Image (cartoon, rainbow, N blue to C red; front, side, top):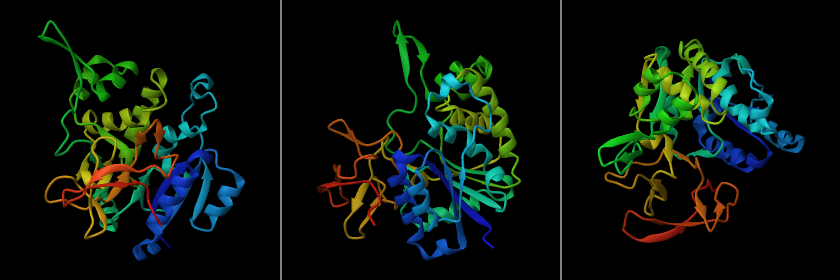
Length: 303
């Protein structure tokens, strides 16, 4: 019986991305010992039939915390902002859970092993969105050249969610944690902390981003024990483009020593001429190679 599981979620619009994520996992022989489970947030019957031949389980995502209907407005994919905090409820037969957003794909299996190792002993395995080459980590508006109005992602969401200024200040300049890739053991206290904070953030704030704010609260306010993994374990392309190593035929970090990208994450999209690469696989953008050349390339997974 498989002990560890990788979980993702999608609706019909992101099916192709989800399919690519699954293919990127299954190409590694090591994946044979790992289960793949999918939360359905609006997939078609045909899409679920295709997925059922590749994955272990598919279950319908639910609103595990009650959310006002006016906030949903037909966007069932927003269930991902809630249901991922309840993975052991959906798929109870596993010991370790690794969540990967469907707009990400696996480039290096060592990263998968790292996430499963990171969550041992109840820890949260996750990556902060900060590293070499990040020129801005928090935004501020300056008044009279002296006073600053904080506009960091954590602080902005915290204020809107009305969690209290004392807690919001603790989050203001803490490196933002991206919840698009994370790992937790079944019995980790992280689930309870996250769910408790999520109930708070959903009451006043937007659904989108609520789960990210809640996990940041768990780490920086509740002091959930956390294993912070390197940036290449959750490489968010919209923050910093990778380079391409043509000799090794793989994406790498843009700065020396050019570590291999473990998980490529297209969060927020990669845009060209008003089109998002996440919904148009034909889009290619200009990136640099490790040999200082410029090439046109898609950042999507290519089978």
